[in-house]
Amino acid sequence: MAKESTTQRYKALGDRLKDTREADSKNDLIDAIKGALAVHAPLGSPSAIEAAGTRFKNAAANSDHLHQDVVKIAGSGLPDVWTGNTGAKAAEVVNAAGRALDRQTTALHNGGIALHSLADALRAAQSQDSTARSELQQVLNQLGGREGLLDEWFEDDDDEAKRKKAQQAAIPHVESMLDAAKKADEATRAAARDLNKLASEARAGKLPVINGVTSADKLVLAETSGPDGPTELNELLTANDMKRSGEYLNKMNDKDRADFEKLLAASGSPQERAYLMKALAAGHNLDEIRTFQNKIHGKNPEWLRTHLTPVHTESEDKSSGGVNDDGSNRNTDVVNFGTGVWRQKLGENAGENTCVASSTITARAMVDPLYALDLTGGPSGQENDPEAFQKRLLDEQHRVHTEGHGNEKGMEADGKGQVLEKEVSPHTGADFDYKKLPDDNARREILPDIEKAVADGKPVPIGIEGHDKDGKREGHALLIVGQEGNMLQIYNPWGFTTWVSEDDFINGHMDRAADHRVPTAYAVHLPR
Image (tube, rainbow, N blue to C red):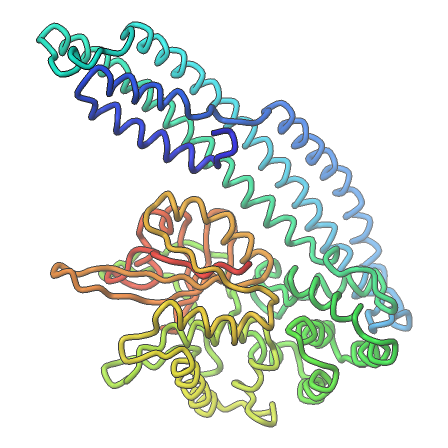
């Protein structure tokens, strides 16, 4: 049992609690209690975890002083004549260093908080489990040995009374062990979530040592975000982008690498450089990237964002804003290109249920800026016509829907897997595993993997469903595109994003991201 996850222990104790409540013989009760005691107590050393958290916090305090010094340097007026090999000017570098140090300070501090919270929760869970486990062992001892076959067949009134008394004594102790397991599970998942997120945000470190790309260049690239909205929610290069672009650069011959570095150096802005790196991470060759730069060169950051980044987070507000009568969140952000919207064709005359195709297209556009520009800017890359964009988007939805053997009812899981592997995997390097989510424990257990994938920059497709009073099923496809704390950012191919909590995902309230017809997440295609 020691190798089981915290979620598996929680589920096992839930099953043993059910057995304890339903035991109708002494032997059944003994088996149920022994089964509960066999589930391993919460593992880990709170003191060691706490010590690590303290080291994080101390490091954060030291980083804070350094950050203040860097801010002073950034404001002192630095010459633009100094540049890195990719054209990262001195002011850009120092400002990026300030943001990185600020992020580092926050990361170290929050990492310390996450570890201290885990230590406190684990210490409390272990103490609670130990007390309940000891009391449960006493109940087991008082029950005595198992009944023989003949005695088990017949339970007189006295034996029944003793068994029920022991049963009523055992139940609260198993409940207490279950509660301790739940607390340990929740604390462990929260710590894993927060630490994975902090690790993924250290993007500069994901770019390996590359000739011609200095540490200053890496820093500016990692800290570049789109205009408007919270910086930390709109970085252009993900951890996966940095890792893959570095791998592709290292595979280039000397001439191609020198040519690519010239493209970076000639860029008109940090955002333009970042999109070139993102194009490289998406797997495009040098000729394709050169053509791409010719289309975007000199464009201002707002033009680049609207044409190349379909999902942009406008606000830090992750609240639901309350819910509508149909169960959906009121707080949503339209995913738009001008007056055009990144959405599937809706209404009775849509002809095809293209939610899978639409979410797949958006996932690809999020990781492949050349594909995004084909849709928004047309063949020339210079168009700014929302109606033309909408037509191209609908045509693409039809293509992908057909590719996945979809029909008027939608697309099956096999077809969804095929279109994801063809349309998205080549641009992220991640294949997809189809995981069914039959219950809340399965959803709880998979959350850390989902959140790590999203933190690394790999959108995660999920399926949600519901049944009406007659048992008729409704299904819909969504995309998890962001994660902050215990909140998940969801793209709905009806044309908007919104935020739902981890508890909503686990406990069947995904109607917050859609409507009451489809409340339950039943499957996920998890990027490997």
